[in-house]
Length: 227
Image (cartoon, rainbow, N blue to C red; front, side, top):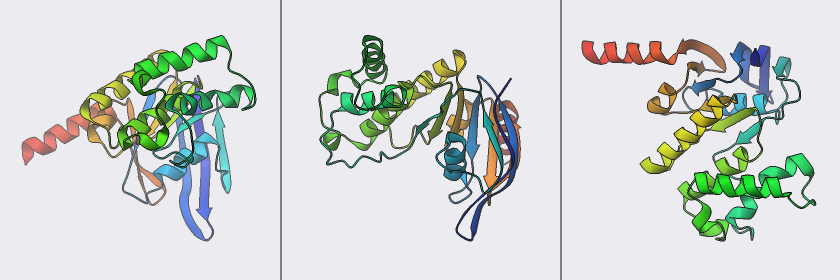
């Protein structure tokens, strides 16, 4: 079953083309890594898949009834905003019920579990402005996870975090995939890409390579051996 499909998708900022004639399909319940140099179109592609950008041409389909959960590297909320860690994570539930509604018992329990899983429970009462960059990154990931979406769209989820946090995040992503969530992740990390079942490499807004992770790892091993 297809989790995401793009057909002849194009996107431009003004007169500058960023995505050009992009076509691919991703199976549901899989992890796909998006790689490429800065400016290759990775973040724009994530925005299109998440539905916050609309293609100038072509068609994007996601599973019926699915509202993608997008996790960015930086929050749209300013650091000076008086929000605690717990409040920021709970904001992930707003899309399901509206920001004026109180969270139900099940949603509160989900927030608690997610805070615990990402090592944020002990700092749940701290203000966002007091956090390190790595801690804020974990808050953003937690905010995405509590949405309970079947499609998780991640922009550099392990950037700027320590090795222990990287391992926590990789475990959580693997858990989401194991329970049937479709995950698409932009990353510069070769190690993170190796965790994916499939790697799409972008250049100038086009997919220039489409490989499975085992093939990419084998190719890299051969290249090192030859060198």
